[in-house]
Length: 386
Image (cartoon, helix red, strand yellow):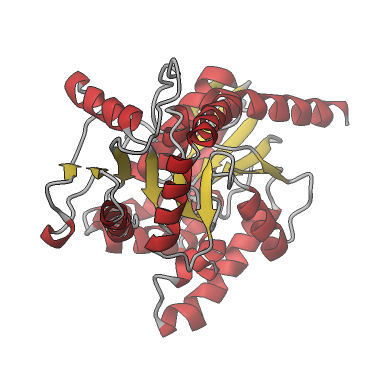
């Protein structure tokens, strides 16, 4: 099976899209078929693309996809020319739906796409609403974007969503059919770690270690995680907090907080610190607004229960692999859950086992790749039999 891979940033760069772009590409290559990366050039508009990429990230991101949609006819010509050079079975878009805008396929092939959110679903959700937007964007640009999105998504053979939440919202917004819109959960942005020999115990009188992971302390719910730690300590629990990927402000740091501002998992010593933090923690405390959240998959890989908010497509099953509370939940609510597990350690051990099982059965890229291969083979078989 030959697959043409489309994204506005090459999957050879592992950092963009929180590593998801590279993971998707590698899963296709390992489990589905031969994959070629189609160039990201804009054809006659290439000088403009280069100028945009030289801008700060925030401006770059907004301009990149909006101008891509506006210049879709010009850019799509170059993509179609690249597709003509080989005979592909599938053109596969990841994250940047604008890469499929205006694309006329030079010969019959399946058209597939995956992302953890769409622009309009995200913006209209609790997640997007928490950031706000300008009047110009809401009244002028957003309707134009929705129109373009609807045309692209309805033209897909397969939209492969990682979460039930995104499928439900996308189906209603874009009018997708059950055949088009499928749920295939994503995996973690780490290689598979060994399962723990026995669940890490939790007990009264012993330290309880909390973990926060992400690049933005405030966006990842760091302040609430710090407050949870302080509430537990006030109740006599020796609670500690480990932070990976960001630096909390001084007023969210004390002797009980350990900070790893940045850990490069390709460096053995730093990878070991990353693994130790996950293996020695009792809870990932991440009350953030997420459309997916790779950190929750990573927590499951280490059998680490997650405390989070029930928003977007967060892959945490309440009461099974962690606890997902309503968006209005307070630090007191999360602290009470931790206290409940200290009082009932058997249930906590079961939750750790459940979290690892969820990773092994669903939240890994091997499962994603196998599922996608089965879907593609079935659809290609149907197409050939027509």
